[in-house]
Length: 115
Length: 111
Image 1 (tube, rainbow over the protein chains, first blue to last red):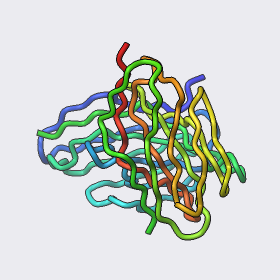
Image 2 (image 1 turned 90 degrees about the horizontal axis):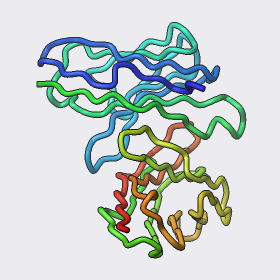
Image 3 (image 1 turned 30 degrees about the horizontal axis):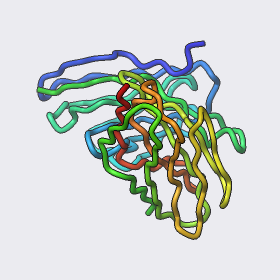
Image 4 (image 1 turned 90 degrees about the vertical axis):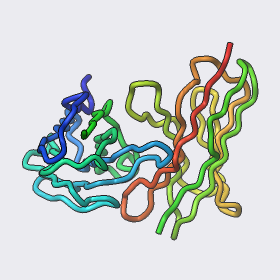
């Protein structure tokens, strides 16, 4: 009954360091998303994927890259972290069914601090 | 583009009080509307949804009605509990299948 699992849960980086956040879902969902959550701004879409091997830019893609090599995994990379990337990152997934695809299932989040 | 505006918080209520959190939206076409809830330290969970005008979504005593004429989807609950303390997000999904969120409203219910 895992659902959407994000690793790590917490991370502190120094400016210029790189890291990868992993999102894994066991529900066989087609669509996956990465969001960042900042105080007073709700969630903003970084990148998303509509299927294995595909990715697309969201609202705030700069400074991030993603890959979807396997259907169940969606990776978010920061090549050179900046303090402006301090945030809480959420992954979500949704099935491709006509009605069900409108509901997104979220992971518990990764809290990232860039010093 | 799509946008969602929701009532700014924080909102503090006593247990058994009536709750309203306002939400209005701007979108092209006929979006589906959602309320998500985020409990402390957790990810977002779907609370309720409505897919067309005049639909009422309901769950756990919460209700919201899709009002196309006023482009609104206000969240209500007749009697809140301490366990309802959380952050509530209004959201819509349009033709691109991407969720657009409001900024969130922090609710604290005091015993």
